[in-house]
View 1 (cartoon, rainbow, N blue to C red):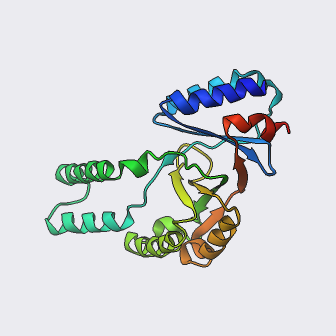
View 2 (cartoon, rainbow, N blue to C red):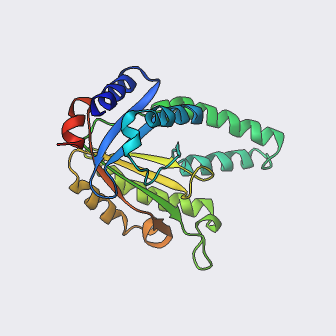
Length: 232
């Protein structure tokens, strides 16, 4: 069964129109499958194909997460809105919507490598979901966009200091899962997860407005290592 799984994993990594990786978990389960696909239908196909493996009959699902790769565009959004307002365009008019659509298309083309990333070839993964607070005392979604842009800029500067040691992929899940965002961190040194996340806890975005879910950590399991990683 493990050999069949290894063969299927190798096939998906070599031939699928997307990205696939397996991680042997440290706690909270034994195996994490990570799929990057262009459409929701392709994600469902990957889930179905895994479920058809003989190995799947011996596994009990303990969690799943569905989200869409997302880029933070606070600063560019503020600049775009300001420029359109200065031109005399009113929000949500036909001309406004056309200008926004054109801007987004241009940004999407320029940022395609970040919107459709490859799963980094790093040894370790750390995944966790998160929300922004929206309670009576603190509500992220009522903060003016200029202020949110400032806080996210400060937040991002912390992450940039770890760019050489951690590959970070942020996904949005409003409407697709129980949390609002998912964070995937990939590194060859797992202790960097602790250092990065600890430092980020002190910036305003995390300290005041963030709520975190469970953290999942694993070791990447290559097809040739499946039997050793999952059976020993």
